[in-house]
Image (tube, rainbow, N blue to C red):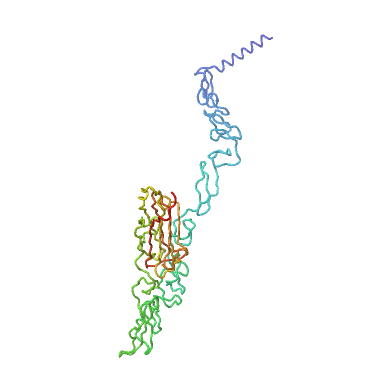
Length: 466
């Protein structure tokens, strides 16, 4: 019995070997001979697509391609198990939420899908979207070019900077403005216009477009003449006349209605004061409402800043004082500053050659500022600065500005004195940045010249031990 079983098994093994072993011409349709065995390369994981191409762990052969079972993407030659996905070459656990990192965190086969977050810039808030691991496309408003509209178009915290214009109040709504009531604004601002041609902003019937009314003693059309063009007058009546009216130094004249043979007519304009050319005297000579306007500008107009300071202007030790005359005045009415570079130079190095002298004692720089006649001293200021590396951007090493204690009422000038020790054999020159300007919130300005002087003095009596 035992021998019979063994013979049956041997016959079964031989039959199986005969079934799988074949040559190229003996494989069934759809099969390929690989190593003497007939296989289906469309589904055999050890011979996927071609003989010997074995699929990796977790992969199956489908249609001749190695794919992950269940569609989970591969990481190299390994398919990630359920609940994990391939990110950056490694299988990682799936997350409940997608992050902006260029990975498929939630294992749905998409990367960074539907991710947004708030964003903002100087103009306001918006939303940006995650694309390939980066936040892009912020929808916040984009800063634009500033235009005169009462808004901060370029989002720099300022409104209408650089584009606002001078507007004149139009109280009587006749579209003509008052030259003495101005603001900086935009054309179209309610109650203001761009011209200043109204001569009476309280009466809408008085403006450059009005018709001149006769015998009312009023300049109805703002042409500085009264009742011009009128053909008649009432005998014995008088009226104002003359150019300039009563503005500035001007005064009205007077003319009388008289009969000269051809009927009543207005006589010659008599009396009053007419406009004349403007002079530097603090008065409105040309009767345009502004004093000392239209005159020559500041003689040092181009030194408004430290960077454009005039100089260096040299003042030599024990030499003649350095004198400067200039004006703190601009024809456009804007504040003015005058900057200078003053270089005080020594000439006492020769003392060091005397055996019993081993220092150069002390130096003084005397600076004076004389404001124009009639100006308030407290409106004017002189400041002296010593800066590191003698540059405008250098750290301030020394600063001295005038105040009430420096005013000399006898000389009518501010006086500043700076003292420094000499160094034997060294360079004792001193360079200072100097500015003349309005003090504090004052509006010091005058077409008349101020005086500025500097003198360097060597004082041997103040020697100290070297």
